[in-house]
Length: 397
Ligand SMILES: Cc1ncc(COP(=O)(O)O)c(C=O)c1O
Image 1 (spheres, rainbow, N blue to C red):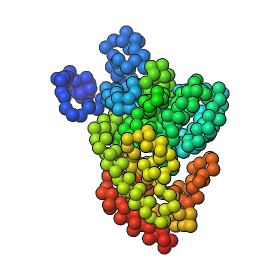
Image 2 (image 1 turned 45 degrees about the vertical axis):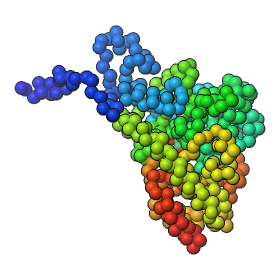
Image 3 (image 1 turned 60 degrees about the horizontal axis):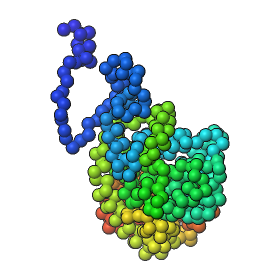
Image 4 (image 1 turned 90 degrees about the vertical axis):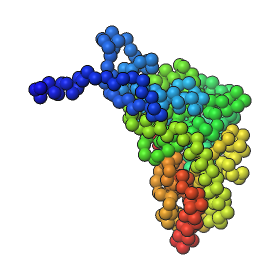
């Protein structure tokens, strides 16, 4: 066979493996180009048509399968995958907001959500305002006829306050019925509470998740989702995604599909560790406050108790203000099992120090350095021992 014949033969090989193969794994379907049987089929399909395939960017059997499973987990009807949790947030902003509109964000929202509003949205003539998630009157006062999107987050980033989600949604419905309510539900992971069915007839319109966290569980990939129930909203989001061009890697999608069956078990284990660690932190005089929504004196505990059946594995402490930020940093540096790094939800415990004033726009009650711990899957007794030995650095520093 001539070399040229071999090249063509290797590409256009006639063998087709028999169908009907089934195993626990969802096959990894890859493709930028997707083949059509004829030109008529190519012309008749649209990007958002999920009954068939058009181009890798707009869906494959692997991405459709993960989207269906995530929608079911959340109690939604439609799910769109995007390249990260932050991409999920910005896709919602881009899809729903136009010049002259306003978006509202809780002051404890994931930081880059606020940053996107301050930069890109501002440049595009979209206003934003920040409300206090524990003060419903502050949300009510910020709503205007221009408000088209209200973000909620529960529990809040870093400080983990739990808002009255039902009450906040009710205020938006009454005062700004034109606004879409979006929840960053990364902390709840679709397990701690039902975002679309919060009780008393209230529910959010859409959720976003950083699948990067608990759904991945590996700390090894970035992926995000947007989930909703309403068909028209799903179409708006889907069209925007097809125009913005979010691609997701098939191997990353498959990795999340592989992790999903163990999500409830991992979430429950990390929840247990988080509570044990939080209780230990509350016995330590070096910490002025321990922030974990299941602790009775944590901000918003009563709302957590009335909304949730679980908590994630995140705990923050306010280091007593008598210790300097440098001493608090020395404490974090002295940790051995907890690694220093962003994110959470993976097998390895992580810690990051923050200064509250630099991550909040409204006045904050926290004067000491905040340290956010993400509990991994290690033995919690070892993690407590690790934090205990690191406290000596705090005292000596
Ligand atoms: C609450 C929350 N939402 C969204 C994100 C963004 O996720 P990603 O890192 O996948 O962009 C994060 C990441 O830290 C987060 O903590």
